Length: 302
Ligand SMILES: *[C@@H]1O[C@H](CO)[C@@H](O)[C@H](O)[C@H]1NC(C)=O
Ligand SMILES: *[C@@H]1O[C@H](CO)[C@@H](O)[C@H](O)[C@H]1NC(C)=O
Ligand SMILES: *[C@@H]1O[C@H](CO)[C@@H](O)[C@H](O)[C@H]1NC(C)=O
Ligand SMILES: *[C@@H]1O[C@H](CO)[C@@H](O)[C@H](O)[C@H]1NC(C)=O
Image (tube, rainbow, N blue to C red):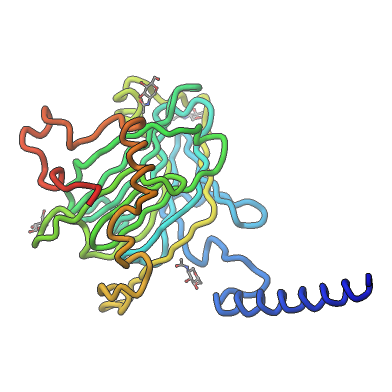
């Protein structure tokens, strides 16, 4: 009995190994090594404020009174699912902003498109806020701010962007926190023409970030360190002049009907976020916008 069981379990594990080997081979990574930072990213500035863990799978960006640091993908993408796990600077992080964003260029150029997640630090024990924003052709002013339902400095959480030509959704641990719709007419305020890189950076923003700039960065607490892991892209990698995957062929899940709208479960989660976590919504700010931007009339539920 015993012998029989062990030989069949050996056969099972041999098959499993073979399947695992084939799967890994078709994923075109080597059977033994995980992707390294350099495969997909390069440092934008201050190499000496960047570190990786010993196994190369966790990355650390630090900010001190000298400088911050940033990295970006080597490739550009247009549409897809973009995801990464982040653990933010703990303790007293007032004034410190960790940004995680997609942008058409590696600078603040006057015609850039951009999708932002910004994590606004705070004094010890006071809550972080996330700010999201959308830019088209150099213009932003589409801020929203949310509280989180956990302390983002204690553990890694997943922050993701779904982008197709119908909607952009910002997710936190797969919960949709913001839905940005395409009004679908020529030159509307929906970035879908240009491929984007993915970036992350840490920097000092104590002129505006925490309580509107009242709380200043306490440099005695430096260095401030944010950590990253598990970068995933399931999307269309850009190739000049125009890759096949970018046209709306609906061949990919991120470009199929289900990804053009919130699903039933996502609607429940989104309703909960709307009720409990929204701190600021530019679409409600009629002092700032006597005439609200046009996309504010689009329903996230459609
Ligand atoms: C990361 O780099 C590897 C090696 O160049 C490449 O095969 C893979 O497609 C890249 N991954 C992404 C998400 O771009
Ligand atoms: C930056 O911090 C270091 C270490 O705390 C300190 O020695 C240095 O004087 C500071 N520099 C500036 C420009 O504040
Ligand atoms: C983008 O902005 C630039 C300069 O701000 C302007 O000249 C151009 O017409 C704009 N393009 C579109 C498509 O709106
Ligand atoms: C920081 O904490 C204060 C006090 O709890 C809060 O009012 C504020 O919204 C928090 N976040 C930021 C970014 O100011």
